[in-house]
Length: 580
Image (cartoon, one colour):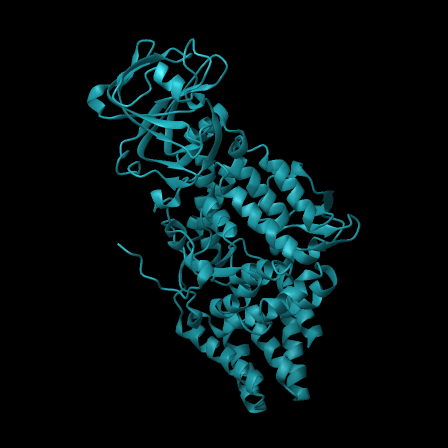
C-alpha cells in the first residue's frame, strides 16, 4: 500500500527511501500557540545577543542564510526553500527517532526537526528534541560547508554502525522520559518510573556498541561541541546553541575543556544533566580526521567474525559483504568459526536478500529467501585456488559447470554435494553465487542443509570484508526501522489556558501591527496578576511595548517580586527586564 504524503516535499526529500519517509510527519504549524511563539522569541532574542560573542562566526551568518527569524517559529516550507540553496532539506518528525534512522537522514543531507516546542517551564533546557534545538541549533551551522560535510559524513558512517539490543532499549526509555517531561499534568509515578528506567539502563556496565560510540562522537561534537583555542573556545554544538542556560554554563571554569580526540567515543553522557566536561576541536576539518580514524575501527571496514557476531547480538537487519562483492542482508543468527576465529559458515533467520553493489540480485529478495539463508565460506581442501579466483579452465577441472554433479570439501571440513544448476558472476567475471539442486551440506556430524529444503544457494567468498547495520539495497526491506509506539502527548487545554493564549495573541498583534492600545495592556496585566500566579513571560512582553511610565513601573515591580520569590526564574526575568 502506497504511503499517503501528508507533508510538503522537494527533490531532496523525494529521494529518501521509504523506511525513512515513514518517520516524516506534517509540522502542523497552526498548532503552535501564542505562548509557543513567545517562548521561541524569548529564547532566540536572548541567544542571539549572547551567542554573537560566544558562538562560532558561522552561527549568526547561518541564521540569516537559513531564513530563521528571531520573532517567529520557522515553517518547514520556508526553511526548505532556503536550505535548498546550500544543498540541504529539513523534515518534521515526532520526537526522538531510532539512532540509525537519525544518522541515515543526515547522510541524505536532511535535517530531522522535532516540530514540538518546549513548555514555558522548560524554557532554559529540555531533554526532549524540539524545534528550538533543531532549527535554531543545528540549521544555522550547516551553512558552513566544512561542518555540513562533516555532518553528512558522520551520518553516512553512523547509519552503518552496528547497534545492540541495549541501544534500542535505551532509545525507547529516553524517548519515553523526554515525552513525559514535556507533557502537562503527567502522573508523577509514571514520570518517576521512566526516570528510574533510564537511570537503570545508563548505570548498566555494558560494552559500548559501534552505534553507542558514534553516538558519543555525535554528542560531543554536533550537540555539545566547542571549537577554537582550548582557553577561549567558541560554541558550535546545537545543544549549547539552543540552551539559554547551558550556553552560559559551558563557558565557566566549572566545565572542564578537553582537546577533542577519538577518546571521546568512550565518554558517556547524561542528557538530563548539564555536561561537566566538553571537547574542543581546533577546527571543523579536524572533526573529519577523527571520524575517519574511528571509521577505520568499524566492522564496516574490518568485516570478519567480530562483525558478524555484532550483527547477531543486535537482533536487527544487518549486512555482510564477501570478498567477491556479494552482499547478504538479514537478521544473522549463527556462525561457525574455525580455530583461527574465521567464519566458515553463517546463517540468517527470516527474510533475507542478496545484493551486489547495493542492488538486489534478481530473484534473490525476501520473497525467495523468506525463511532465512545459510552458506559455508572459505577455500576448498587441497586446492590452492579459491573458487572466486578460478578461471574457466580451473572451474572445468573441478566440475564447476552447469549441469554437473559436485562433491567437494572446504578446508574447514564442511562438505557439499549436489547438482550444479547455475552460477552468478560479478562484474569481474568471478563466481559469487552457485545454485545447487538436491544438495546436502554437512559439518562433522551435523547436517546444515538437506535436499528437502529446496534449492541451495551457496555464496562464493574467501572472507567477510565488511559487516554493517541495515540492508545493502534499502528496497529489499521497506520496513527496516520500527516506528516507536510511544507517541508525544498533545496537551489538553483548559479554558483558563485558552484565555491566557488569547492575551498572548493580543500582545503579539500589538507588536506586529504597531497599533498600541495602553488600555488593552492595562486590562491584560490586571487579569494576569489576578488569574495567573507567577506568569512572567506575558508581562515581560507587555513591558517591551508600553509607553506608559506608571504601567512600566507596575510591571517591573511585579516581575521583580516573582523573581525574588522564585529563584529558578530570577535570572530569566531580570535578564528579560534588562533587555527591555
